[in-house]
Image 1 (cartoon, helix red, strand yellow):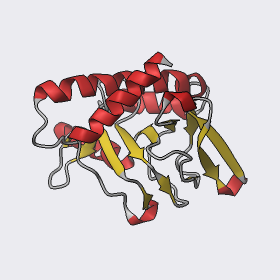
Image 2 (cartoon, helix red, strand yellow):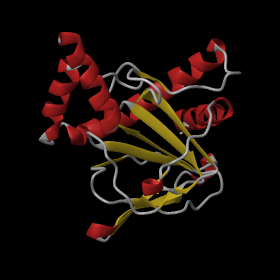
Image 3 (spheres, rainbow, N blue to C red):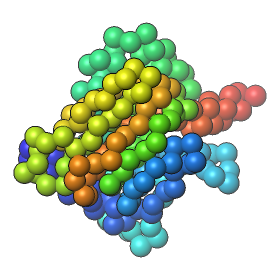
Image 4 (cartoon, rainbow, N blue to C red):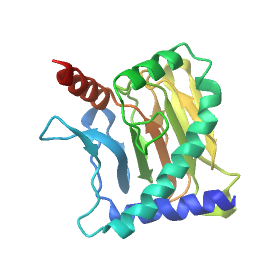
Length: 211
């Protein structure tokens, strides 16, 4: 409980110093805030670089936020890895990651990116990602820790998974899914994932170095 209170505080601090990103039409939904951390292909270049902070965010501001997000992603992936390591894709992904120096969002782990939404829900969609996604959620108040915050829906399987604060889901993003509207105003939902665009850009850069 104490750790999740710390995560909640730092996630909300991230909202103060990160610009909102728009979700594409394929994955559109609703949120009052939506921010990203980690690596991405530069929109106007070929390099892989960090998602930006607001210009007013100094290094002294960014440092503690990045450290807190790194700890959160580590907490999430250390749980989801218990299942991921038994999947056929696990060793293949680790091999590809090592061979082409695929960067992690925070220097370690699997995910290249980490997104956080507030008051978020989405329509049914699939994601063009390269590996399994790790997802969790938080109610805005610790007193609601045991309450269901979201339902995460897989319509092809006719399954709606209830998510309480701190629950961790590992899922295949190529399977159609959706996030139902949150029960509480100010609820947070966040995911760590590996986008194909970032992955392919990094591999292309590494191949270019050999030519």
